[in-house]
Amino acid sequence: MAVQPDSEEFYFRNAGYAGSRILFCGWQQCPPGHSYGPYIRSYYLMVYVVSGRGVFQARGKLYHLEKGSTFFLFPGETTYYRADDAEPWFYYWIAFEGDWFESLLLRASITPEQPVHQSAEEAAYFQKQYGLLLNACGERMPGVDLKGFSILLDLLHHYSITESRANRIETVSAPDSPHISRAVQIVKNRYSQPDLSVSGLAKELGITREYFSFLFRKQYGISPVQFLCEYRLFIAATLLTATGYSISQIAEQVGFSDFNYFSRQFSRRYGQSPSAYRKQAKKRLL
Image (cartoon, rainbow, N blue to C red; front, side, top):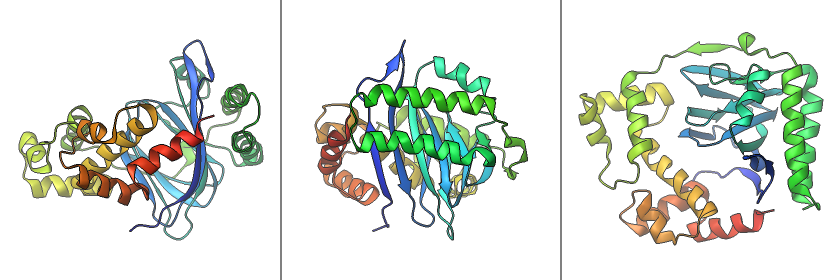
């Protein structure tokens, strides 16, 4: 079984304004090589690197990041990030949703085309603000929902007044293959279909399974089989947290026809059974 990361996450029940809200926040010390993705999210996620190193991939670019960097994941975008093998990173994150945030990020010159902010001079400030939020959540302070939303706005304001140095970060061009872009979109739209398979995807794309696997590994560093399974498990974890569906219903909704196989794969990916994961998620609700 893979080594599981040391982490903690907190969910907010109702922290927002005019349809925009903070969803959850957390921290994580990753083991060497620990990765997420490629995933497509329905919300914004900003991740601040406290220490260590790693890489972040979005829109065909690979960003090499370290302390003081923040990378932003946008709704509907395929992203991938991985901790360094020698110096794995420790980071904080905040997830939020709402159209209002798009304009706030734009004021900081943060867009899907430029999703990284780096300001070493302000590292102490950003670390302090993220830390205040996580401490407030951990101690379950009264009014923590309002505190969380105010800290999020303060952070976004500070990103807008500090210099973004994304154009100075080392990048490696790796244009998306149109085959892989289409395959990811198909998985996003049809992951719930049990008969969706790598062989079927390759046939639909008009290429061999072997060439499809080669292109996918070249793009994301994992096999398409892993991606399909992990994307289904990611959606399952979201449903376990956000809905009251039974575990067997969720397994079926994300494309697993064999409940026992689903449970084994989920436990292998998240280090605990689906029922234990749901129970722990409910305890984290603020």
